[in-house]
Image (cartoon, rainbow, N blue to C red; front, side, top):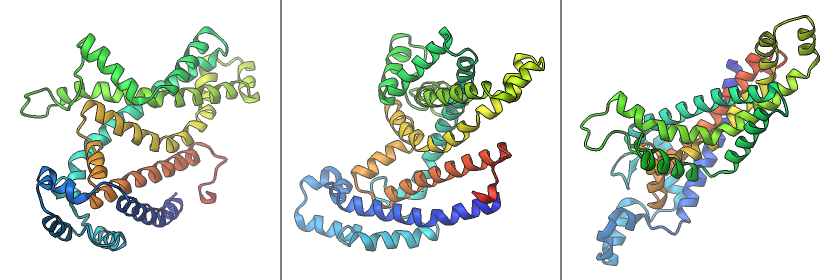
Length: 322
C-alpha cells in the first residue's frame, strides 16, 4: 500500500506541473483583462497610462511563462501568492471556503453511495419486477437531468412552494453567528441535490453488480445449502457485487467537483465555487492556479483511494502489482 501511494504521488508531480502551466497559458489567452477586473468601475474613467502602470504593478505585462514560474517556485515554499480579485492571500481565500465545500461534497457523496447501494440491491433482488423497473427508470431520468435544473426545481418546491427549507446561504438572514442547527438546515437542499445528481450511477452499478453476483455458482450453492436469503445477499452477493462501485468512486470525483460548483452557485453556498468563477472571469492567475491544482489533486486522490479499496476488498488483486 505504501509503495502504491508513493508511486502515485511521484506520477502526480508532472501531472500537476502540466495542469498549472496549462492554467496560466489558457488564462493568458483569455479575452478578459485582469487589470480592468482589478480596477473595477474605476477602470472606465482611467486613462491608458494609468492602466499601463497598474498592469506593470500587477505583473500582467510579463509573459505567462515567467508568471507561472514565479508562482510555482513560491507555491513550493508554501506561498500561493496574492489574489487580485479577492484582495487577500490565496491561502486565506481557499482556507475560508474549502471547509464548506468539503462538507457539502462529503455529505452528498455519503448519501449517494448509501442510498444508491440500498436502491441497487432492492432492484437486483427481483429483476424485471415493478420495483426494479421503477428504480432503473428513475435512475436513468435523473442521469439525464442537469444538476442546475434539479437545484432550481428543489428551490421552487421546498423553499418557495412548501417553505420548509431555506433557499440558500449558510445561515439565516440577519444571524450574527454560525450555529450547527442553521448550517444543517441550509445544508439539506444543496447536499440533497448534489447527492441526487450522483445517485443514478451508484444505483445502476450496484444493481448490475449484485444482479450478476446472484447468478454466480457460489451464490447458487449457498442457496442450495439452505442459507437464508438475507445471508446469501449480504454475505455473498453484496460483497462481490460492490467491487465495481469501488472503481466508480474515483471516477465520480471530477463530476462531483463540477456538480458542487453549480450547486454552490445556485444555493449561494460559501464554498470555492464563487471564488473559482471570480478567479476565471478576472483572470486571477494565482488563485485560479491554486484552485485548479486543488481540484486535480482531489481527482488523483480519489483514483488512488478507489484502487486501495479495491485491493483491500478483493483478495485476487495484489496492490504491489498495481
